[in-house]
Length: 225
Image (tube, rainbow, N blue to C red; front, side):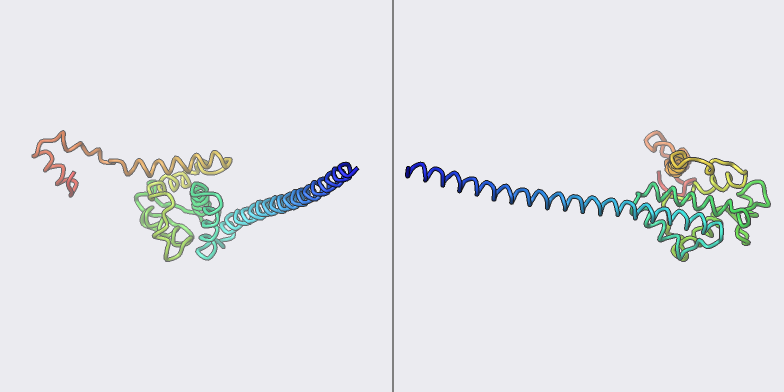
């Protein structure tokens, strides 16, 4: 009898402890589930909010160009947020899209009084420019103010003449494309800049030259090979 009573009591205590432990586990599971649901809801909210921000940024660029409201007070913020959220490549896309939009504007876009852009005669937003380089500085000044000269997301300005020529010739190379195609076009410009820095004059290897010929080439370059 005593043993039966003790066994029954022990089983009852064990069941109570197990029930209590299970209740604790259930409570923790419910808490984790609630926390996961909250975290997921916050994640979705952040994603939706970010999407709204980038939709707004896109409107700022498009309407800003259309209405002449895009300048150094708003563009740098849009560019920096784009790079922060989407990466440097998307920042390059945004920059080229903005430049193309400004140059091809229906009323204030670029015009040239000469067939070849290197001969000057460029007019943009009511101002004249003697060269593509000067025009590019004007574009950067509009978008970034006094800090424009230091803004260089493409690693160089060699791409600008390519885009400028396209706009003046009415090319659709950088318009009427999907985002994916446009991004590939921009990366082609990046490669153009990179190639322009790789031995553009075709300098020979110094080991292949006689001392006299090396002296001659150094004199032409104004520096040593």
